[in-house]
Image (cartoon, rainbow, N blue to C red; front, side):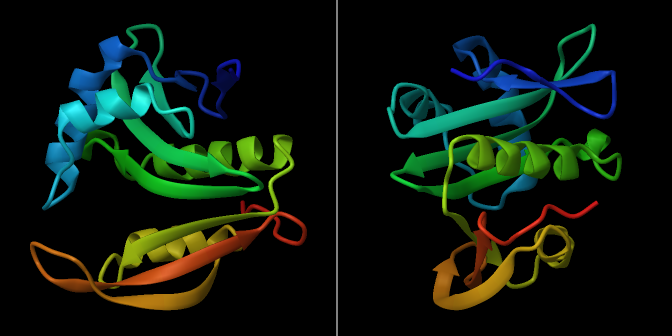
Length: 164
């Protein structure tokens, strides 16, 4: 298991999620997504040997302000979720979570990372592209509520350099 990673913001810490964090994760999930995953799904992911959930916690109170969920499959990471609570947006937490994700992949010797993003999610697309993700495909009608295509992005750990 990874040790918690201190972020550039000394008042925030990224660490592996605990079962006690799932209420906050679910709250952020419901706040941010039109088709939210259930608490039971996140609880099952805590026991999934491929899955990793990390949270961004405010220090010293420990309030969860964001999270990411990803899978490690052989030499590849799949980013399934990254979200920041509404009150914590535009403060760099999403960027720090993404950098943490890339640091983990690099430390594990992964070859690449992949993700899907809603075609209309301009802010997320900008975040990924400024961190050396490149668009490699499209999944038609991947999302529902509303129906929308997903853009598929890839990060190559052998050549990509996280953005600043």
